[in-house]
Amino acid sequence: MITNKDIIILGIESSCDDTSAAITKNGAILVNITANQTIHESYGGVVPELASRAHQKNILPVVHEALKQANISKTDISAIAFTRGPGLLGSLLVGTSFAKGLALSLNRPIIEVNHMIGHILAHFIKKPNEEPNQPKFPFLCLTVSGGHTQIVKVKDHLDMEIIGETIDDAAGEAFDKSAKIMGLPYPGGPLIDKYAKLGDPSKYTFTFPSVQGFNYSFSGLKTQFLYFIQREVKANPNFISENLNDICASWQSHLIKFLLSKFKKAALKHGISELAIAGGVSANSELRNELEALGKKQGWNVYVPAFEYCTDNAGMIAMTGHFKYLNEEFSELNIVPTARLPI
Image (cartoon, rainbow, N blue to C red; front, side):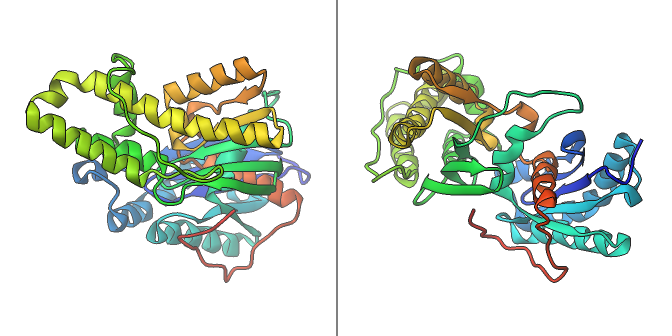
């Protein structure tokens, strides 16, 4: 039953290679639909042109299915939230154009959403009549994905400050590029996590880069891993196949120690005991386990998002749209997407 007082947000996410649509009603998620693109697997990474073409093909069916499953008419929509950036420009153009066109036809407002803020606010996604365990303000959020690695101080739903970030490459890229070096298919991050569970994390050792403050650097780490593999394969051509589990376990453990060492320092420095993770790499089982162990040791509250809200999804966009709707933060129809969009 929909009333005039209900706030119905249609969220659209198209920042990379997943086309997603979600519906929220009064801050509770009704449905979250995502169409994945498998075409990129054969290329070892996302091909921007192919991604944008696939979005054009998928966006209408995905939105239609979301409305159908939520039992919502398009005329019931209060506003349309969409990912403006950061992301692949061609992909963002598809979602932005669709949102603007639909909003114009329905005479509804549009709400631009920062993709990274969406990842953080995924922690506030809840189902109808559910009381989820949500972080309390202020909290620190470690956002880790293929394109970003940031430590964000979250003061309120829409008031955030970056206190640390990567100065070059992202943690997710370090996982995927390392997997590619070992000949694993794309996306390689989840495969490293899978094989690491069977290996010895202390078998091989690596060094940490020296980076000031709470910032990160993964460029040198990737190079270090490349030289390590090249050296070992030169001595033993079967080194990777014979030691895959131990390599993955050691490398993954090293990356996660680096991530959490900075995160811990930031929490101690700022005196914040509410910690959360977000982004695609937050689905990594060891990162989740190690953060929870750190929380227990320090007496901190730790918040880990559900797996379905770790990777790119429209649920987090609709949720962010809900909070911006309450603040009446609407966008003009002449707004354009941008590949780079700081918090």
